[in-house]
Image (cartoon, rainbow, N blue to C red; front, side):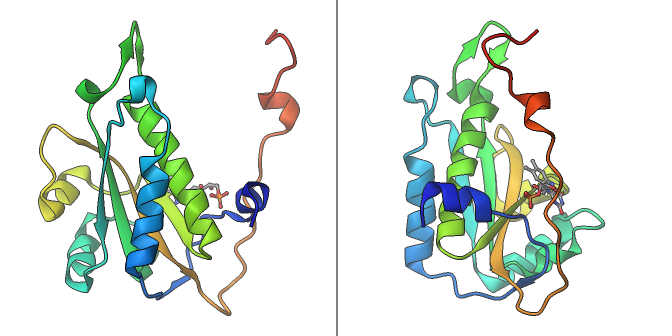
Length: 174
Ligand SMILES: Cc1cc2nc3c(=O)[nH]c(=O)nc-3n(C[C@H](O)[C@H](O)[C@H](O)COP(=O)(O)O)c2cc1C
């Protein structure tokens, strides 16, 4: 699969079925994160990979209403970061930006592996911190729910995108 194809195929599916999370999968996703660029090569991200069924169940309490589909994830990845671990240039704080870049790489790698990796904001960072023993000074930016798109599940139409002319400018913004 080319990068182009991975970008085209990546989707945040909600109807998931169980998939075996092998060490090879964990390794490939981990290396996709490891090789991500960051300001001054600071690598401010810290990830917690959760595939133990008991821990996955313990996480049920952290999801917001409407995100119950997450219970069908086979792997949950908690993405954490700290401001003090990355560049601050004037008003620009790069820790969340750089951590987001690493998430982007992970999502595409998961796609190439035939998995769906769905980031969410609808969860309680406080409860997540407690369940996964994440230190207080790390922000829990997202949880990524990983699984396989369920066979025979209802269609999940692609979400609309803004027109290119709304988001991309040639040579000058205005
Ligand atoms: C930071 C972030 C937070 C999101 N939070 C949720 C969420 O709480 N629940 C959910 O079902 N999807 C969530 N999504 C998925 C988006 O709704 C989805 O990426 C968007 O609609 C585009 O669809 P696509 O990823 O299939 O292209 C989130 C995505 C991102 C990047």
